[in-house]
Length: 174
Length: 107
Image (cartoon, rainbow over the protein chains, first blue to last red):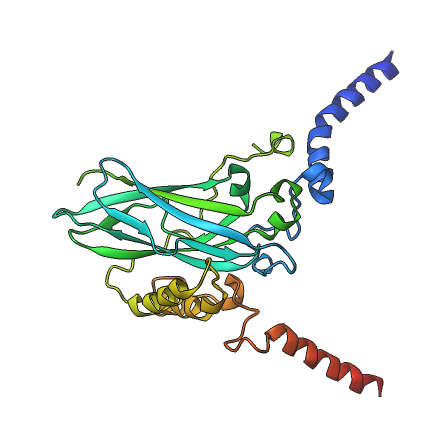
């Protein structure tokens, strides 16, 4: 009786352990297309080296504004062609043509969605409120690279173009 | 979030930037490097940015000088493998230096 009980408990325990075990095995071996953790850390400086022999990707930059946002907001660098692992600098320009100070906050989206996990922004102007005084204009840089894991992911084989789209919203009223 | 990810293809979570947000250059302290870089980029066809890499490095250097960016070594932000002249890369120079002591040790 005890033997049967211990076998049952053992199997229940195995089924709980299977999920993290599978995760460890799949991410280490890249089985079935799971993204591998080659060097472990996402922003490891060792990953910021161009992957030799990988196909170039075109990164497009787009911008939009919410209806109530009175800024002008355009990308300066409309497109950049690079390979995974290569860092690059892109710029947007924002201008406040009105007579009042406006605080904005931006969000971004990456298309195609499945490539978003590989779009590593080292530094940008998103997620934080930015204030432009009346008639002020400013350049906003985005310093980024495509994670070298992108080159090893079979699901990314057909992705030749990635679009980064920033949208500025009006933040709180002062 | 971590358990089910191995069976999902897309991860919808937004990844924040590694070093946070760039402070705004409202005084235009780095306007000149920015203009130089943009002029170079506009001349390039199809978004080729390799020729303008030194200018982007100059812009980042300006940001570090004016405290608009945390100072860091260029190796940590992906500029480590390039010298200002594109003819010899650091990697080639390092491998050339490596082979020399190996020859002297065997003799």
